[in-house]
Length: 112
Image (cartoon, rainbow, N blue to C red; front, top):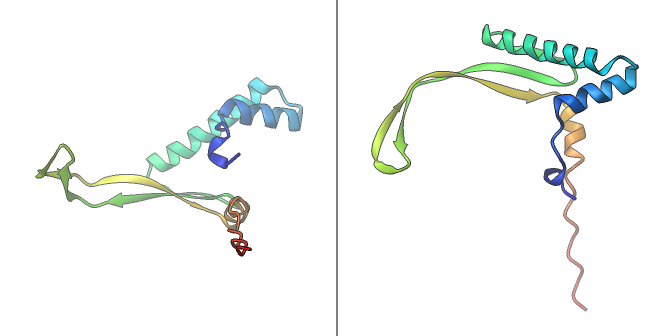
């Protein structure tokens, strides 16, 4: 089974796991998880970066205006306005743990 075959982790499951590990009420943990996410979004909406040590950094980046092509009519150009986007840069610990999913390719056995 590959990583893409596994179901997504949801806020509900996060709250459940934290609740089991801490013996706090799952409803209370769900409120804390939501407040944490709201705080991250609020900071990003203010243009602030969010740094979570040993996890990663959410950065607000600004894309400049550019000319694009209409996919339905490639001869037509479209002005794409500038906009702010959120980028995520994983921390060293996360990168190292996720890299463990990469399996080295075994060399082919010689033909007999």
